[in-house]
Length: 149
Image (cartoon, rainbow, N blue to C red; front, side, top):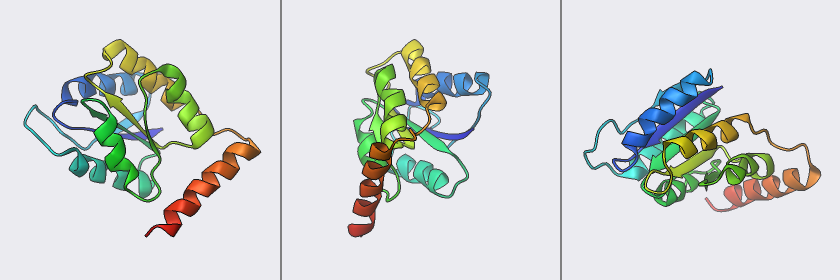
């Protein structure tokens, strides 16, 4: 799977370990920044990351910021993106299985490197459920995207 990852200054240190873990799992990854601790605005990173998901260049995205909340808000502003803050393994896989999430957001100030790696593994192995209820609900989310231009 090809992934895109991005972070703000609060998440860049954790992001490095996540990138290494993604590669260890056999996936390709594009890093859209940030690359150091200098302040950067997470909406700018979210814009670059979501563009790669929506274009089809990358299958899914991972954003890392201080809490994951700002990254999630910014990513969800983009039509066609379904982003979720995941700080536990269950949410990391179920958000894909039930909600067809295409961007996972992690809080570097909330989780450590080991849990972050477990979250990434759960997110990457999850597949959208072949379930009528899940498909109906995601279709309604897509209708909401289309309705609010």
